[in-house]
Length: 88
Image (cartoon, rainbow, N blue to C red; front, side, top):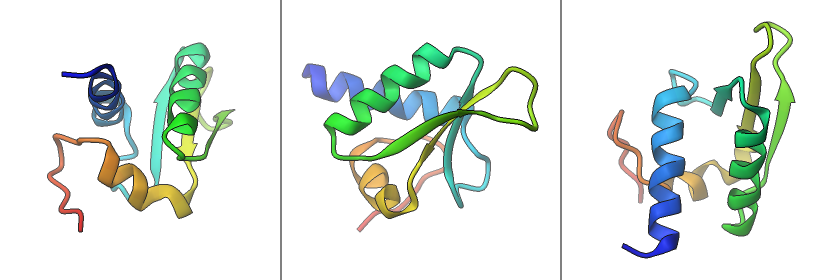
């Protein structure tokens, strides 16, 4: 595997573990803001824009949200294990 492929699988695993359950929105939650900022930097390198913010509804939890216009790009580039998503 290449470094790029490793990074894509790590992002996919992070999404699978900490995702918004319905996949209507692409969000990843974590207490480690630094981890989410690094993930956002990698996504930017892949051409996927996102933001990191403190979620007001969850005490001390940060959210990385991928902008909706980049949802399809994320689903094509990042391999997700669960749920199985069919991409064009």
